Image (cartoon, rainbow, N blue to C red; front, side, top):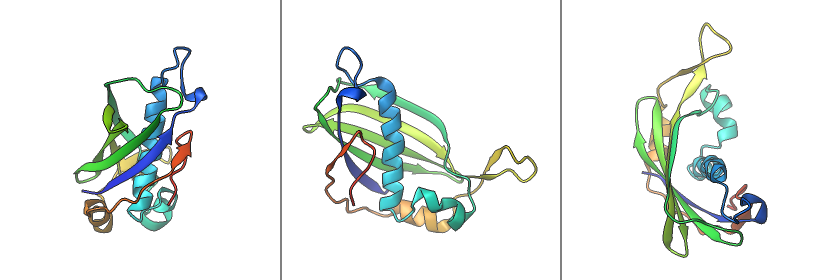
Length: 156
């Protein structure tokens, strides 16, 4: 399945008073890394509605296993991998490494969602398009990434 790598430089504002990364930042980085993975697969998230008629790829489950803490100044490499493709959802596993050591492993389940046909304020899961399945199933050749400030961007 598709894999992408992204570097994140931990900044002072990412940490709590104990100088450890505040846990919620990892979930923000999950989202950033998913966006980078989709872009690397040729599926820019901002174009999904126009290209496929979906409202987005909302998270329906997210979890993390914290192994060792990270702190201000650490540079992390995040490996994001599509680990499961289902009819209308998919699972992405994010593994955070510091100098080759696994520090955190997380997972999110997302749904391919379109506007609900009768209720304008709701979304409805719809099947993943064949083209999307093909792009997310391919073997990636991830390029090296420069560390991004606050984990917000990956350089392509």
